[in-house]
Length: 274
Image (cartoon, rainbow, N blue to C red; front, side, top):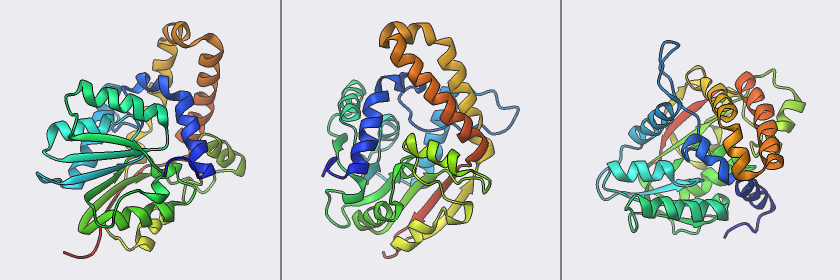
């Protein structure tokens, strides 16, 4: 299943439209992580650090098969595969992302070890128990029905397997207008903090760790906007003034709300069984 579902189609179209701008973040469609106020790690280094944190929680072993749900252009999948003797299968609802991911996988010399296909995370095209690990790295927030995603992630994971995902809980003071803006930019219904693990628990997962680190990722929004401003002329020359200005305006609006209102949580869970 690809984009038959209207919500999946909408999310796919959104990422198709902004696809070229992934170069701003080196293909990493997730936030970065800084250890504290005195941490001067550059943006790309902080993005890679968060990928490593997700990787560590997966506890990968040689021969494992990892499913990357909402894999973007496969930049995290490529980095994980380069450092582990594992097979990675990614899914996305963006046709542009599939093509760009294929290019990056081939350039990294990982053809056969990493693959990406067009598929809806709410109806994964894989048999029960076919993966040892599941990762949903900054993709679950794009789900209109998070329980369907986690139920599918639970289904395709083998008993005893690990699932790691990230989520953006909202501040209780977030207004309906702010939530509407976030939804327009493919972030559906950010949960309140005490509901972050609910979709996983309702699917049958046992939560192993919940790491709240909103204060460690918040710098990301300002750094991306700063980088966009520095590269504005070059990006305008590549993509046109109208498209560039629309993208910049949308990013300023959505990132302003994200910085003020959203936290960040990494959830590690396990499917019961041996």
